[in-house]
Image (cartoon, rainbow, N blue to C red; front, side):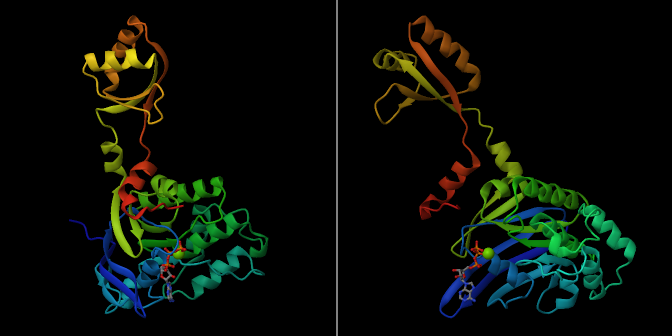
Length: 312
Ligand SMILES: Nc1ncnc2c1ncn2[C@@H]1O[C@H](COP(=O)(O)OP(=O)(O)OP(=O)(O)O)[C@@H](O)[C@H]1O
Ligand SMILES: [Mg+2]
């Protein structure tokens, strides 16, 4: 078994009488992009701040590549690159000067060659000699990623990295992360946007009110979401004849709640053409035949509906 890059066990954070993080455990594997998904105030930033020790956890263990962040802090943290909150840059310096300044603060010797490599990786070659104050949000974000990458970490941590980015910027970030993951870097990323997590992550944990309520595995979710049976929406007239026919053919259906002739039929897709033929032969008018695909959003709402929870 490979060693997890990040291992969180029974993390608890209390502030005063309030339990902000309530017994959260998960681990991130090498080359995995792992998400923390949750609404505002769920505890995502607190988890991330605990990992990079911007705050002290109340209890639980956090290990990075097997090194405990409390007892082996230097060893543990040297494998981490993080952007928590907005990365700070000197606006009157160029991107390159900012990166060099940051590199000079690293314990590791960072060569100019390495900086050049990273600039290419985040596609900032053209703008790297311009002052950061002239950068767009997307460019700043890429410079932030470059900064996090400078000491060649095994684990990258980003808190809401795509906040404020346009769809193009989000896509670019996504591709960049996938590239890095392919090279074996693990990524922990938080967001309150389900769609984004779905596109970006291999797995993500749903965090609600300080608790981890579900871990979604995108590979398994995709497999699990290819069922034999699908629900088909059919608008069939006249209503009563259609009802009688479907019952006589032993086909289960649910009718629209408003009493209109909209049927929801569970069937394997390959049976649908024959059913349509039979209905047509029986003089039923078929206005609609539409497969109902359950989005991840709906499944997510199903998972979280015990809390009435929505992410957005
Ligand atoms: N220093 C603090 N003192 C008291 N409560 C705090 C403190 N820091 C965070 N909290 C509370 O902890 C909870 C979790 O906050 P956190 O910032 O981790 O949530 P989040 O999931 O990152 O939310 P967002 O999506 O808004 O960034 C919130 O209820 C917040 O009010
Ligand atoms: Mg936050």
